[in-house]
Length: 125
Image (tube, rainbow, N blue to C red):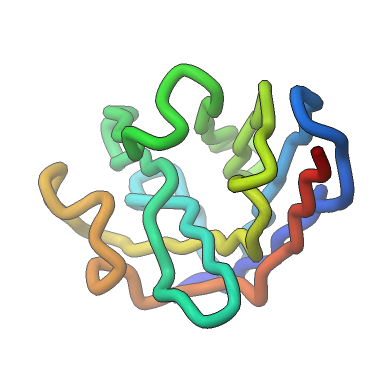
């Protein structure tokens, strides 16, 4: 397993941008499946975006075209560039990792065994 720490959250106005970073330690993530999930109080954790070990991407329909996921193997980090933010994007954002997975499972919460503590994103109208 790897240890994950998210950073980059904060407060922004609607239509603004934020970049989240997940820093991994304990193992190289170069071949890992990794993902971003988000959760608001009282609701379940929902997928945002994911990338598999070959670099294939998967996005939730709600953020497609606005968010971009990327992985920097040299820095052992995962990023989420969030543009055109909306108030409904307000949530705690979590990074997740798993050493082996299949593409069709990328956006499933149960795929991942390593999770970060989360970083809060707040978008005001």
